[in-house]
Length: 525
View (tube, rainbow, N blue to C red):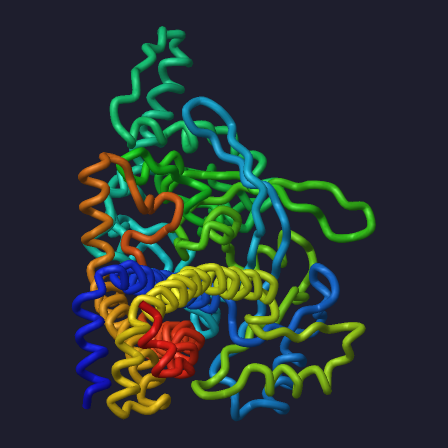
């Protein structure tokens, strides 16, 4: 009993130990906060990667080297049919997207992806990343009349307004066609054209449609399937002129970062909207490779909130891309979605045993992103080691303080031993004192860390209000809230580690106190 009483007395009266308690508290709180934020970021990143990539991917070694995709998919079903929830073919071709905005042509390197509208949503979360609500229910590459979200549906009302998006669709296309027609009529009558100053997002975005007045002849020559063709029953076939107010080119869905930018307030400003026409240049198939460009109409936007994807992916119907490339039914890859609970590595190994590695490559989504995932894990491990050194520094502080207390309490130790206290009892006093320091520091640190994590976004808002600067810029991180995940196992290990360091730091001073001889201790002063 006397050991507990002395530990409590030392803890209350020795204010010098407060420095060690604060060190342990700050170390534990910092590690809890950092691990929670890192876990949140990792989970969000992996969730978005997995939302874009299917569970397992079978690729041909080449751009479109899977010559009979239906046979390949039948073979996959024969090998792992009970594990498969969905499957779809895709074509991947690098290209260049070109559009006109603010009177200038803009070009961007892209990855042109051909997908099957009916099956692609079954292997990924592609549909939930689309802007138009109808496309999220049933994907279509036809331009919608209206209904494009002016706010980010993934973040509901917490996202800023998408400036200009409310004017997207057929209405916008018709207005642009009417202006183009009026301009042509003025040109034919040699009337001066008065240049107007753009005063809205809708006016700023019309050049991309007006610039396509000469697309009809090229479209009929290169892509007659996109023009409205009518047959004269009494004469040869005649092509009806392409009317941009009523017709569209083949639809494409680009990543949202290809068509927009954010201002300092976090609002999206679009220089390309659904209804605008663009041109995409891709290499031709065959031995003599050259670039061919084709007209397309933007029908929606794709927003996964992964900048790597949103700034490079452009989706198109797979049949359109196959026709443009002249590759028949060849595809680049087979995307496979597994049933819940199925291990992707097991299915991957099954397919690898059947398909020759010199012709096909089979990967899980983690294999495809292995380098990035490994880098994140390494960063997290190194950061934990560095932060744990904060608690280690507190341990050295406890060691120094305890040695000083032992020297100061030498006479008290001698009195206790002369009254019958054992060496083990003296050892227990100082070990208990170290444990009590660790308990107080780790307990308070855990409470502070958990409270900080719970109110981290409110704290961020307060810091932004005080400093007037964005602390967590959504334009950089693609998050409007700081994601956090508290892992009870991780919190437990942090607290146990802090307690262990505090106790270990008190072992040497406690042993020195326990070995003191009563007579020598009493003669100390």
